[in-house]
Length: 284
Image 1 (cartoon, rainbow, N blue to C red):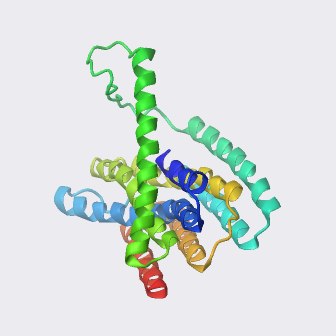
Image 2 (cartoon, rainbow, N blue to C red):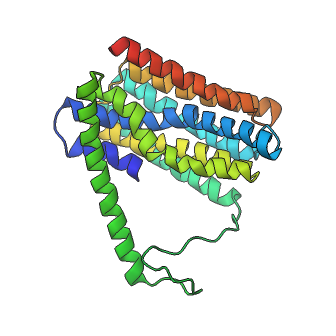
């Protein structure tokens, strides 16, 4: 939800092209970060835990589950980026509901194949009792309301901060948002992947990233398709191309070897660093 609210607030509740660029940057940044930097972090975790804990170096994942995630991501995101290059509003309006339908199909397939994670959820912050009974609705609803309010307020403050930072350092707001938004909203969640890698739950670790990639290629992208002109410049297309390329390489290797090599995850750091270098060099 934070990843979707940032572009919504930037596009709908702020005026000016600067905020529109912040919204588009947030939309494009999450798939790019997930397929590059998040993969690099996972690869680095593999190496560290190999040295410290003696775990297997390569990820051993459920081939069918990971392949499904990557195929859906490549299909959804490639279609969205092509729409951003073609510049036909009729195509944008048509594509958005098709992406939603595609995600429903993806969700159905996921629910039909995934099993129980066999883990207990933590107690609600508004219901810190350790007794076995379920929390009542009067505690659930206030926690949801407070959480939503905090997310909206945080997103509004973040959008304003990105605009200020862009003005101070002289880089386009789109580039700043593309790089910072996913670090604020997505990267902290990926610490779960590191923890699962440590405990040998490789399918969960990679699925935490690839599942988010599928989500980010549908709902935030739909915000851009429906609420902006969705015209992607060269920097935007480059970030999307690197994201697609990184995912395709992983899919290709998985289909051939049936596993994900640690060094292939580390390649994500190269793609990320290359984009940052290019973005800074061409906009300074």
